[in-house]
Amino acid sequence: MPAPLSSLEAAALAAVDETAIGRMLLDLLAVPSVTGSAAESELQHLLADHLRRLGLDTDLWSMDLPELRAASGFPGTEAPRSEAWGLVGHTPAGDDGPTVILQGHVDVVPPGDPAQWHGDPFTPRTAGDVVHGRGACDMKAGVVANLAALAAIRACGARLRGRVAAHFVVSEEDGGLGAFGTLHRGYTGDACIITEPTGGTLVTANAGALTFRIEVPGKATHGSTRYAGVSSVDAYLRLHEALARLEARRNVGPDPLMAEYPVPYPLSVGTVRAGDWASSVPDLLVAEGRLGVRLGEDPEQARAELEECVARACERDPWLSGHPATVTWPGGQFASGRLPADSVLRDVVHDAYADAVGGPRMPERGAPYGSDLRLYSAAGIPTLHFGPGDVRLAHGPREQVRISEIVTVARTLVLAVLRTVGTK
Image (cartoon, rainbow, N blue to C red; front, side, top):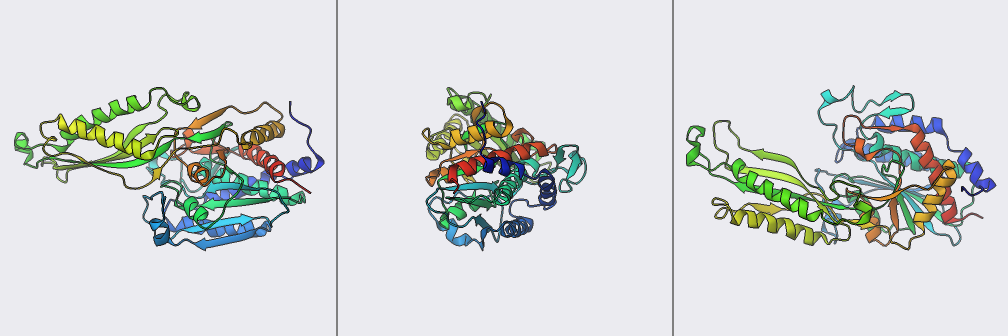
């Protein structure tokens, strides 16, 4: 049963402004903040203005990219970039209470083929309670929920014993540079809620994902005498079959939090490039993809398994045994992450949700994708995901979110923050 609300909690929930939420979401979606683009930086400056208007102490800084790339634990990136802006806003230091972090990334993936969208991906479209556009659920809705919760806490006049901080980060989609740089600057906390889309569930763990590149050699000849050469495409197909068998082995007996997924730890090849002339036998194929990392698995072990798989497949092939494929690991490298079993954050958010919506607690699960959760967890900050939207709609032309979901998440965040940091 939902617990009775204090008068302060009731006032804070009443201060969650649905109209302002809708307006803010449309504003953020109109900024095409693709990972690594100038608009990504533009959005950080826009959000800094919002944090200042909320009365938060605001730190907006240009990250030292060479320093971060040389730092231990750098997560890697894929998108080229010449700058990256960090942004943290926080309430003044309280007495003796903890610090709760509300975190969200501002970057989005490219929209893909414009013909598959109903209009411009960066001109948000509203249909009743639903807003469509690139970044709607992944994860500008979550950023808006964080801002709405902070605004409601301020509006109700809460005097906090602890501190609440907003971390808005770049480059989550291609590795986590923004979160890494924020933690590297010294920002920390006692709990962190990342408002990634979780579709009415609580995500307390996420798998990792490692970007790999496989280069497969061939022997070029004229297409009319292809039998005199070796197609790198044909050679790669044998490796592709071996990778499929590796994926099957790595998904036997998953952690219970991941058991609901048909493939908890996918091995997916995303790009394949070969040849430079239609009537030539291709002498090089480059395949890039992502390797899922199991919960609790050392990423080095995952890398070793894929490298061994490719090496053994090459040994069994007449051509590749003498001309083996090479494996490298460019781009983003996501380890897995998990909320500690004894963390009170799980129950705090569960109860806050039940009290905010007047219903039962949420189901709990893990997520099959990498995220910033693993960076905050590795820094010793108990972290989970809870946010608006359905991740199955992310990265696609049907990306959308319901305003009502953002309201529910914002109301839940309000209660979770007030109960964790404490009030005077």
